[in-house]
Image: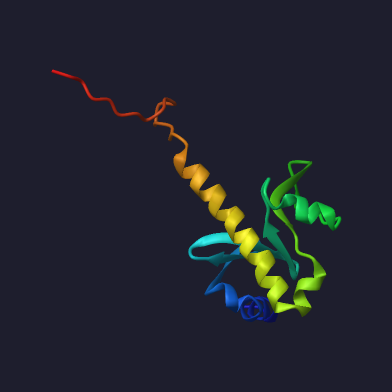
Length: 129
């Protein structure tokens, strides 16, 4: 594991246990089993949604992007402000907001109906007899 990942885990320890998993040449950071941050090229990106995205935009920060099939793809992980690396309290505040955004996304996915194997929605019905 990189020194930067270890630094982030220490910086964010007040949030609770942070685990890291390798993915796509970078790492995903997880809190309570849900990914809330992405590390790519030693840069931290935090999960953003409609609730906390304005905080990133107000600071002129942008999303993580990558090229795929000749197009630029943006993810819902936005660059963390540099100021958090010198202020553990501020770092935890931003990480908690990212963790909350990740949890909202996770819960929204769980509440969506799942698709069945034949393209239909999986539903259950009760037939009265």
